[in-house]
Amino acid sequence: MMETNKIIQGDCLEVLKTLPDESVDFILADYPFNCQDGRKDYFEFVKKTADEFYRVLKLNGNLLVLNNPINIFKTSSFYHQFNYRNGIALIRKGSLRPAWMFGFQHNYALILYKGNSKKEKWNGATTNHDKSFLTDVIEYQNGFRGKGKMWHPQAIPLELTKTFVSVLSDHGDVVLDPFLGSGTTAVACVETGRNFIGIELKPEYVKIAHKRLRPYLEQTKLTEVTE
Image (cartoon, rainbow, N blue to C red):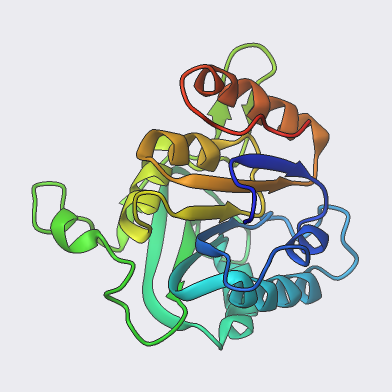
């Protein structure tokens, strides 16, 4: 049985290769936006991760890919084996103003699924019929700041992450975040009754994620997260 509720520090592509086929129910992949992160060929890396995502995702499971519009445009064909559920514009309060483009004010999320049934892992039907109706345009402010040096500039807000996790997976499911960052997805999983596997390359963000999860380790039966 695969161990869950843990953080693995390392290169996500190498760690993904160690996970069994069809072992996770939902993947939230918030890629590094700047195409750098020390990689010589970012787009080849994205292509390889897309193949691994398809392999480890269970039938009818969901994949959320979050990136800036330019990277989404350049990499969307890498996910050809998946089916399309939604594209979501995530609107920020501020904007960048490049010289030769319209102002850049949004990031983009692709929601894809593996298999033929878009109904199997979808809890949005109930959500979309109450007063908190969800559309494919969502206002948000990215970035996380905790106490002291607990800071990540690109983190998805916790409440939005909890919404994605709640709508795109079921209670008790295994959620994989291959770019865990400061640990927002792990916290969202604990608070919504999911299990998580988090992978993060940078040791400084792993330390922040550990600090954010520490209160939950005292309250739940989580596996002690890996240092």
